Amino acid sequence: MMKDAFGGIVLSTSFRWLVPFSIVYGVIILCLGEYSPGGGFQAGALLSVGVLLSRIILGWDTTFDVKGTTSVWLAGAGTFLYAFTGWLTLLGGADYFLDYNFFPIHIEPMHEMHAWSIFLIEIGVATCVMMTIINLLEAIVKRSEENVGSN
Amino acid sequence: MQIYFVEAVLLVFLILITCAVIFCKDILSAVVIYSSFSFTAVLLYLMMGSPDVAFTECVIGAISTIFFVAVLRKIDRWCD
Image 1 (cartoon, rainbow over the protein chains, first blue to last red):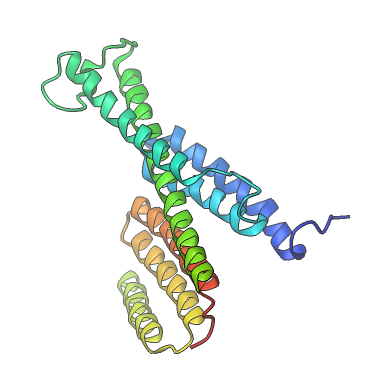
Image 2 (cartoon, rainbow over the protein chains, first blue to last red):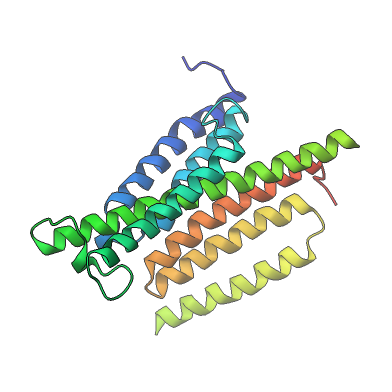
């Protein structure tokens, strides 16, 4: 028998089925991004959908409790990972930003090295998008709470 | 030829949904109708052969619906 822990059977079942599948699908899109539709942006958006749904269903502070400052910091870290991969290729002797042929860590064959550097970039983009969306919703909710409190 | 017909029907749906969102009085139902706009746009993008854009539209449509509903819940204006 299903425990009635949070807000009825509809919310409970939708949480149990939607959130794990959306997060796993986001990870699949992130890992297969270099030769399938989708990429870092879509993976980050899917991961953030999982987080947002669980926070809306289970309550604001119970799950995935990423604070506003932490999410801004992590979004910056994701952008830095993206830029750092491009700088690594420039340091390896490339003529332009993100020329994967000059990635300094040599992995054979060449297309596998391309795949690994694209994977690094996608991790950065996914982190940035996910944390930005979480931070947007947090900002909306927090600001309206302050307005309600002041009134 | 039939594919153009289906695309035309979807485009007419887009226009009708937009008019419904504009002229709808209730804010929450406007948000729900707007999510159906996103769904129709997903179908159109799929028929035009770009699953990538369709996937992005699908996810962003869900996220924007969550945003709108969260704002409505916080400002406590469900009707009119």
